[in-house]
Structure formats: C-alpha cells, structure tokens
Amino acid sequence: MAVVTKPFGTTPDGRNVTLYTMTNASGASVSMIDYGAIVTGIIVPDRDGNLADVALGFDSLDKYLQGHGSMGDTIGRYGNRIGKGRLTIDGVTYQLALNDHGVNHLHGGVNGFNRKMWDVTVTSTDQMDSLAFHTISPDGDENYPGTLDVTVTYSWDAMNNLTIRYEATTDKTTVCNMTNHTYFNLAGHDSGDIRNHTVVIEADAITPVDSGLIPTGSYMPLTGTPLLMNGDATLGEGLDQMQSCPQMIPAGGYDHNYVLRKGEAFGLVAEVWEDSTGRSMEVYSDQPAVQLYTACTTNLEGGKGGVHYGHFCGLCLETQHCPDSPNNPQFPGTTLLRPGEKYDTTTIYAFRAL
Image (cartoon, rainbow, N blue to C red):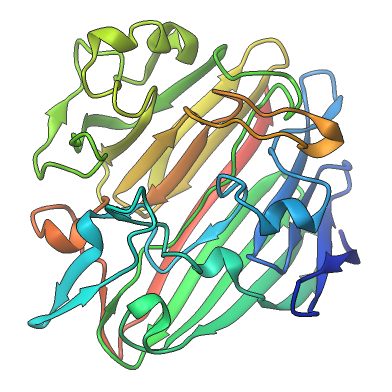
C-alpha cells in the first residue's frame, strides 16, 4: 500500500496544510488533511468494481475553514451536545461555549479539535496504511479542565476497512467523548440524497430529546416508530413519516442517539446499504451509543466538483457515549477521564459491495 501527500493550502495564520491519501492495491482510498484531522474523501468500489467517492467534502481548504457542517471532522473533546454548556466535575462547575444556537455546547466548542493543526506520523505496510494524528489540548482549552494529550489513528487496509483508534490521557480530571463526523452517501457524494439508503442499527431505544435536542434523561422504545432501524424501510420511507413521530420534528429528520444493545463491548453497531450500486457499510465499535444524523438542515454550495449539498445529502453514524452524559449519570459508561487513566476506543467503518 502507499501514502501520497500533496499541499492543500495555507491557513490564515500561515500554516501549510497537507492532504494525505492512503490507497490499497484495488485502488480504493481514504484522503485526509492535517487541519482538523478531517476525512476529505473515501473512494470505494460498487458491485461492478466501479470506484466512487462516498464521503461528502470539499476540494479546497477555504471551504473547511468556513462553516461546513463538520463534514469529515474529527470531533472533540466532547462529541455531540452538553446541555446549557454546563458540567460539574468533582464539585467544580465548568461553563463551556454555547455554540449551538447560543443555548447548548456542541462538538467541543467554537475551536474544537476540528480546527486544530495536527502532527501526523505516517506508517505504511503491504496490508495497511496508517495516519497517526497527534495534538495537545491545553488546560482550559474551550474551558475544559486538564491538559489532554490526544492521538487519533486512521488506518486503511487491503479489505477496505477504515479503522479509527482514539487515545487520550490527562493531567486533571476532565471529560472526553471523541467521534468522527463523516457524511456518507454510498451512491456517491454527488448522487443527491440518501433517501434510498437502508440502515440497520443494533438498538431498541434512543435517548429522547427536548426541542433543543438535549436528552430528557430517559429512554424511548423504538417499536412502532419510524426511528426503528431494522432494515424494513428505507430512510426516505422513514422521513415520509416524520410528522407522525414527535421526536423527529425538532431535528427535521433523523438526528438521534441510539443506545446499543451490546453496551461497551466491541461489536456490530450498524449496517447501511444502497441498492443501485450494491455498496454497503458496516460499523463496529466499543462505544455504547451511536448518533444517526441525516443532514437534515444541510445547504452548502461548492462541494467537491462544484456539487450542491442539500437536505439529506448524506448520513453520519457517530459512535459515542450518550449526549449530555456528564449531566445524566444513569446513561451507560462514563465520559470522565482521570489522571493515570487512558481513553482508548476504536471504531471501524467496513466498506463492501453486494
């Protein structure tokens, strides 16, 4: 296998950004930049061997410097929302940025990990390429306590498996809940919406939310609702039932945290397939939950090749601990990270063709 690099522009403060592309023997590839540790492209075959890019993104750094819906971003310190941007650790309350409509904290704040320049170490073998992204988030960064030492390694192998390993340590008790925010469209990033995709999620319940998309603290069974992802309906058929499901209305579609049956054991999280191309994707993780997001409000001009990304242009499957977990100790697991402990979690996106 091989890793190829090329320039990808310069940040406003003069830092050069590099595009890294990992390609296997079949020609399938994953591309990333060291600004934000962002996935910019995933090229995989369909059932006839035709290659297409199934990750939404942009051809220039300028687009990633602007608001871009977190497309492809590595998210941290805390993926998803924290209600009112407030959390308490060992009796001390921390007020985080209210960067979600001025009410809640979202995806690590105004300048989260998706806006950092990361150091990159490249490893290449016959069977796998890896990009190890490293950064230091200082104590008080976005008002989170503790200096967080973070490495996120993206590996691409000969079988078209994209493995993401998140590792972090801290010198002061903090919270950590990292994820990846790639928008997938298995028909191709430029093929329109994902209404014809079928999704299975290994979950029987979600954490229901209020009008601001903050969990209420309870669990909601999925049986009898369009939120049930058991493969019996396409996403479009589910979206057509939105008005019958009060939980879907605030988000304008699917933007929900599914509580996985497997808990924190490593195992299957979700499966997605797209009939016209035969492409499918399996997601595996040791995280206890996953957020399904269907680009409900996306409206971005100037995607790759000049494509317009509109509503439902892609889907995200963000493996995670539950949103607002610091304020809901009844949710599975913990997002607390203490000195001497290691945050260490792995997610795999496995691409196949049926």
